[in-house]
Length: 314
Ligand SMILES: [Zn+2]
Image (tube, rainbow, N blue to C red):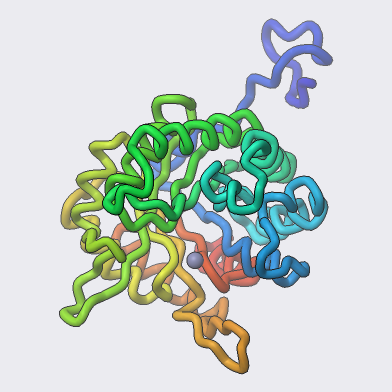
């Protein structure tokens, strides 16, 4: 149904498809807008009672209102981009739960939930995480990886995602295949982020030894529209990563989704110590370094996003 004001050529508002769709995120970035993504989903699912060993993506069907509630909390916090509960929703991961026949259903549902909350003005980023299989080790073939990501990306777009966000990547080959599979089979804007940590010399590398500079070149080659980093670091360490990316490319939009600090295990419970105020205080410096989209990863909550929104003057 057409929810917009009547527009030219629209005589049957009950049948026409709303044409006033969300402005493309790349156009917003071209206007130098700084955009806010959302924060952690896993952390909030745990707060809602998900247990270790439960399949988070199955909650898109069995606990739909809880998942909707998480998306809603980020909408209210001011996120311009709402992600989806589909990080582990690829066929290889879902096979571990015996859910390989439900890949399409679970991803489509994930995107539909976030789109219901986001409406047409804000963006839905379909989350795709690593498969856990390594090409290097011969665990999987390139074709299998491509097909795995293609299947997930198509379902996320069908459910309403206008962005695919490929996250927490550490290997160039897997990330490139995910970018290509999404770019070649959907109309979505493609974001890819890798997870870095700093070595003894203060250089940033992924678990597979990839530097931010190498990521920038290879992910642009693969066809990514937006690149960046998520997870692995608190927000302060992300500044050096943005600078490293900007040394290689001063144009491509950069997204940063930091953890609320490095996780600490206290009495068997994982604790993230960076407060909303502390994280938000680094936002101006991240923007100055060249970040265009800022959100959070593990341990961040709607309170973190709200505080970042305040710093952005919203
Ligand atoms: Zn994380």
